[in-house]
Amino acid sequence: MSAAIEIQKDNYGLKMLLTIGVLFSIMAFMFNKIQQKEPITPSFAIPVVTDKKIHILKSYATAVTYQKNGLDKSQYTVKLEQFDKYIKSLGYKTKFIQEDKVGTLSKDAILFIPDAIALSSEAKKMIKSFVSNGGNLFFNNSSGFSNERGTYIGDSFVKDITQLEISKNQNFANFKESIFLTQRLLSPLINKNTGILLEASVYDSIPIFMTTKTQKPDLLMTTYDQTNPPLAVDGRDDFLLSESGAAWHGYLGEGKWFYMNIPSYLFYDATTHLNDYKQLMSAIINYLSSDEIIQKLPYIDSENIVFVSEDTEYKFENFKKYSDLAKKYQMPVTAFIVSSLAVHEDHQDMMQEIAQNPYMEFGSHSHLHKKIIDTNASYVKQETADTKILLDKYSSKPIIGFRPPREELDDLMKSHLENGGFRYILNATHKEKYIYPKFDKKYQRLLIIPRHGTDDYSYLINLDWDQSQIVKQIKKETEFVTALDGVYTLSIHTHLFAYSSNINIVEEYFKYVKDNPKYTPLDGRSITQRVIQNGNIDIHSSKAGNVITLSVRNRNKVAVENFSCKLFKNPNMRIKSIKCDETPGSKNTKDRETTNIKLKQLKPNSTTTVYIEVEKIL
Image (cartoon, rainbow, N blue to C red; front, side):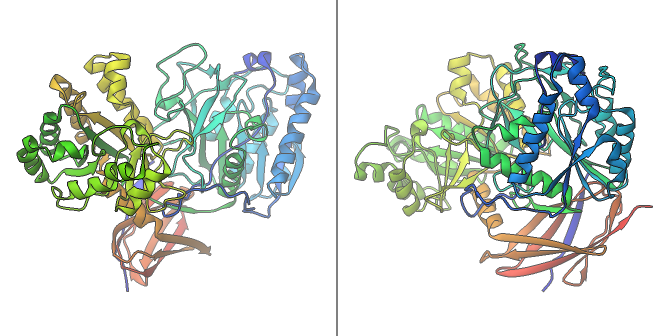
């Protein structure tokens, strides 16, 4: 049994800080394998992923800088001790090391430099040499922004290691309130809780670095709704996506680094999401301990997903405008229909016509579009499960998607929906913020697709923006959410965006998506199918010598086409060959840090083994 293979390459200051207070330390990042078949639930047993000692740098230059700025150097010592205690609490062994001893570390050691705001010139040279020769480095915030005399010299050390550029718009940013952090899904940080919104109370200025097309951040600073960059304390409202990075990974010579612009106290002083921060730290350490990491693409074969839907309700006649646009631009879309309007005698011809549109998926938006929760059981059934019976008569495929009116959802509704054959719900996330589709913890056959894009009611009623402003913001949100590998959702209404000339907003957005091939528009059914299938596929990799063995187990009862995963590796290593169950695969000698591996077909209930031979580029 063999599977054909394709591979695709993915080319991928400081006085002001000290006057505000003290800087701290650390690292962060994530643990990235979305468990799509099961609801994501925090595991409080944090796995130890390496038995290597984690060396923590004690910077004499930082202590000097504290004193020079009128601060007690013991504050720095306390921070280091807190950080050391935190890492030990995760089950790792630690050891402090002085600046002048970095050169004694073995080439594959792990070195953490938490909040070392000052470093000597000699220490910087040794650290760079350590990484270049195969060492693994974590550093953060304003590392090395001052020298051994406590003189501010800027970001040259961070730039020398990472090639990151400080933002010319704003070198540092202060945040009046908490910011939020979200981890990208497709990152070498394998984190079960990827996508969970992490509150981050940052009391100090943080440096702002620019992200380039070849340096995608692993962690982004976001607003609470995870669709936009945070607003800085100075009120700047044009913070860019490229300025929103909070953490990056990369390689230098034979070694690797992980850099975060936030202070370390964010980890050990966390009052919320404590376990999520622990998972994040373990994911960082796992990355620094691993030669290669392989991640599944979350939606089988697609990235940068866009999900456009309409709440088809008041002004029902505008449904046809939406359908016609979808057909014109060949955009897979979904309509969540109020079933009492669908069955109205005046709408039969239109319903039958739209049902023939191959780009239109039907879903339910209740029967009467009235309050459902806190009513009686028979009424709940009428508004949920029974609507499927009515709408299935028009759809060529049984409908599986539901959009609750008022975005109100309770267990009774979910029970009727699950038992009635619904398989996904598009809804805003309230109590728990997350950016990726996941299965309900209790009703595990129901996939919750989180609605993130700003609602058209907000644009037209609350904000009263003109069309050009709205289109610009929709594009901005699309860029931001897909940069996190999330599903961008644009939700419109028949009486708002589909009404009168407002439909031009939708058309402009459809043009934008079609003109940008990086985006993949999918309807709710396709997203759900991909997430279900992906959750039933397990991957495991190991390495012996120069050969990486990837085992792919398909537990689905159906064949899965074009299953893809992403290989993260040192760009100094290239793929020499790929074989699948002894069948030669394609070769790629020009790949850099990441390579997509695509298996054209996984047979039902099967295991496929892929052998990836790598070699060092001389």
